[in-house]
Length: 264
Image (tube, rainbow, N blue to C red; front, side):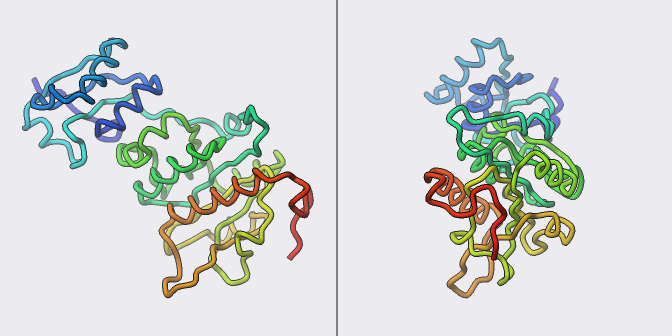
């Protein structure tokens, strides 16, 4: 009997499934193309699954014809439904080395590839967590998990009303900075990001909502020297995260406005 698949809970591709195993995720079962059993990388994956008593099924081609994600590489796993963290969980996290807290907030990004790429960069930069709205946004589905390359299993992700989440972050002493390409926004290298920081990124085209803009402490932009007016949301988010971490690695005395709102 061919097992049913819940595509929202599917993790697909050798690397994504291996990362889920490494993160200790409770996979329900793994499906492997029967013609891939001699693959060295796959043998390592199967050994890990065996150690954790995760069932493995070897499938014919017609099984994988049902999988709508073409980059499955002959390996898919059925995970438990994704468990979202709370905003409290994210705020409770502190870096052991004293690094500033970094939270990433996504204002209604609907492209799961962008969301997954941002999750991957946020985890790579040691972010405390990521916040998504409960509606009109990509949730953590199979495509997000694939694009995140395992990072979704390591990074706390919460769903909350964005304006309410921003107010909560500010009450907790986190400065909220919105990414906005308007000329009146501060060019990112001139902004003080050496503080506990929440970076808010909007959807491509729509950008940040008016309410979210009003809630931000200040707005920043990337310099654009060419003909195009904006970057892909995940690319822009990555540049901003890396600039924030670059500044946060500097001695506090090298930056102005420590503990005070920037004046522009």
